[in-house]
Image 1 (cartoon, rainbow, N blue to C red):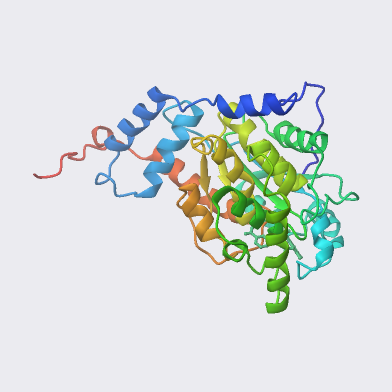
Image 2 (cartoon, helix red, strand yellow):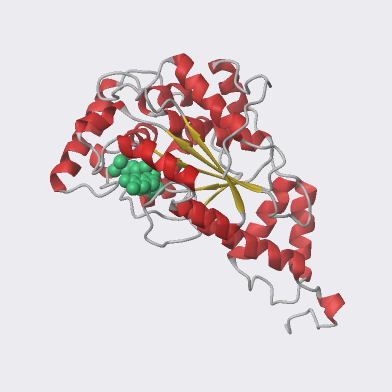
Amino acid sequence: MSMPTHSAAPPMFAGRAAFAAALAGLPVPDGAALEAARGRQASLTKPAGSLGRLEEIAVFMAGWQGREIPQAERIQAVIFAGNHGVAARGVSAYPPEVTRQMVANFENGGAAINALTAACGAELEVVPIDLDRPTGDITVEPAMSEAECLAALNIGAAAVRPGSDLLFVGEMGIGNTTPAAALCARVFGGAAQDWTGRGTGLDDNGLARKAAAVAAALACHDGAPRDAFETLRRLGGREITAMAGAVLAARHHRVPVLLDGFICCAAAAPLMADNGGALDHCLAAHCSAEAGHVRLLDRLGLDPLLHLGMRLGEGSGAAVATQIVRSALAAHAGMATFAEALVAGQAIA
Ligand SMILES: O=C(O)c1ccc[n+]([C@@H]2O[C@H](COP(=O)([O-])O)[C@@H](O)[C@H]2O)c1
Ligand SMILES: Cc1cc2nc[nH]c2cc1C
């Protein structure tokens, strides 16, 4: 595991207008690489379509990496951590100090994500953001000032290594399923209860308190502008906003992204609200057990690779799904073509 090195490069987003411009003007996948990868898939020694979703993943990766045979050698995992003012309202089963304690656990190599990144060949970075300064309580005020929101977006963007073959982002933040639920309701509509789940394990009373907090947050910010920056600033959190910045930066670097669970997907939702194609470079790793995730994935138009009943966060679902992506690319790169293997390549009509 490594801590990020801070470069002297200028921030990707100089201001909220630069962020909006970056979100408006997005690169698209390489058409020639897509076509070449589809051609290669058709030439490999298997009945057409028989590797199912693995074939689509290989072609997707080819398009974003801009080569017929994409790689999975430089896999970057970044876990952002933040604390939340709304946690003081009893919306989590765990106390806020666990955020810092888990960051220490990540750094000492003892967390699930350490084991899972080692297993999938990803290099892990942990980015704690102002853990001693929880965000504003979203039920009564914006989570962040404009400067704080911009700083979080830029921390996320700066963490992305341009040459990565694949990036996954994850988070650690006690209380963060509350802002995540508020973001979902703000972007996609619906009642607070539709998006509110038990998070780390709330009981029924806790769940009711949490739904009331989400409803209060929505009411508090109801009249505010609804662009992605303002949505993240008011209802997000630092680690949530950093994930959004990283996802957008990855797009500009043409680095494909695996999204993790409910909070990670909620962080990406405001991007899609402003630009319907903003998540075209993303795959959903898994469907979390957190109640709102099925609905969220549906609204995002993402079909998750895995349903394992996980609800840990910290990038864990994405780390597991990385093994699927690696399998897809191994088959794409390593299989013989019909011509090479002297196998008859035509189905009998
Ligand atoms: O990834 C998920 O879908 C997920 C679902 C529930 C909980 N979590 C993790 O648990 C924490 C948030 O839960 P809570 O109950 O404190 O809001 C945070 O650290 C997340 O990483 C993560
Ligand atoms: C122990 C613990 C580990 C976590 N990892 C991500 N979120 C978490 C929340 C808790 C409470």
